[in-house]
Amino acid sequence: MSIQGTGKRDHLDVLELRRSFGISTTELWRYLVDSDYLDQWFGTWQGEPANRRVQVTLSAEEGSPTESVEIVDCDQRALHLEVRTGEGNEIWLLELHIESREEASELVFRMPGLDPQMASSVGPGWEFYLDRLVAAVSGKDAVLVVFEPNYYPGLSEYYKTLFNS
Image (cartoon, rainbow, N blue to C red):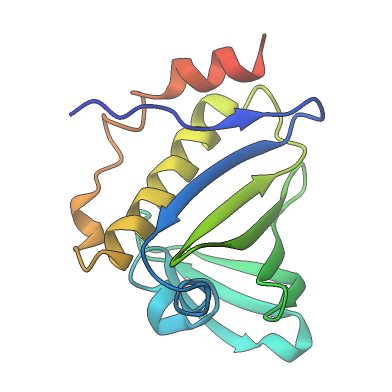
């Protein structure tokens, strides 16, 4: 199975990925913020979102690690979620925005400040997770979306070239 890279890089080195869905924006929003829906493709969260920090347990990663996630912005009316995760030199800002497309919706995922040296692994990782979201929304088992070798190393060269050109 050959997976094609869909990521784009803008002039500010922002990674952008898009996925289209045949569900309403409100339904898609649940897959980003409701722990039960999020678990179908990414992982579960625990904590108090009102305190702007939750613990996310990643279900697709070996050992199901838990990460602290800061909620920078969560605006249901604007369908915009912004979170910060990581530690030290590997702090990532992730922006997710849902746009309405007639009777469907489109998720716009952005990651500003992606280190070009990390693009060959980070880009394939987000392609993988967003394709798991597509599977979950479609009623398929996201476990069937396999990271190696299709996404990594399969898309590594695409992202290396994209961010080092």
